[in-house]
Image 1 (cartoon, one colour):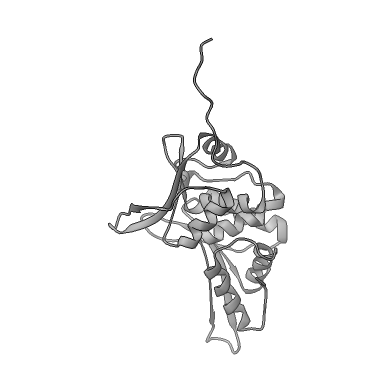
Image 2 (cartoon, rainbow, N blue to C red):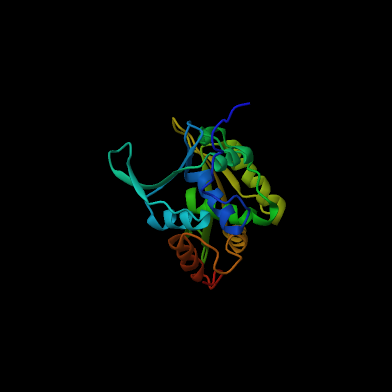
Length: 224
């Protein structure tokens, strides 16, 4: 049999760590796999997000730009790696992931690192005082996806691990998306797990927002 050419070389070291799992969470929410079977892309308006992604995967590529639908440029990290692309397909990602995403094969040890990446990708937190009740402070931590199967899987995994169930909602629009919301005590319990390890890589502005919200009721959860 003749020589079929050199084997592809990977830019990414495929080894599960907390940082690697976090990067997979970013890709599962904000990432994109090109239909060419080679290129992987993460687009974000937050440069820190992209720098974190590069750090987690030890990527030595420059942050570039792409023109969005609105005509405005956004920042992105794009690179080609056939081996990493195949690995991502093997754990449940695909080039059409926004609608087909379902279960992702994540080692149990790193699930909440993965979930922190998902939160920094398509998650949010918010809080307010509910005027209907005296001294009623509300805190929510939520995750969103266009794939109901994926968001249902996340909800199931969180429940199995720490016993909270959250609340699933759906937007009524042409292109609906799904959210799991964890309110107050459930949200606090989840935050404790997501940010459990001091110094874990994360999007600092989201972490600081949570700290500021919970300090209102004298709860201090995250130490960096």
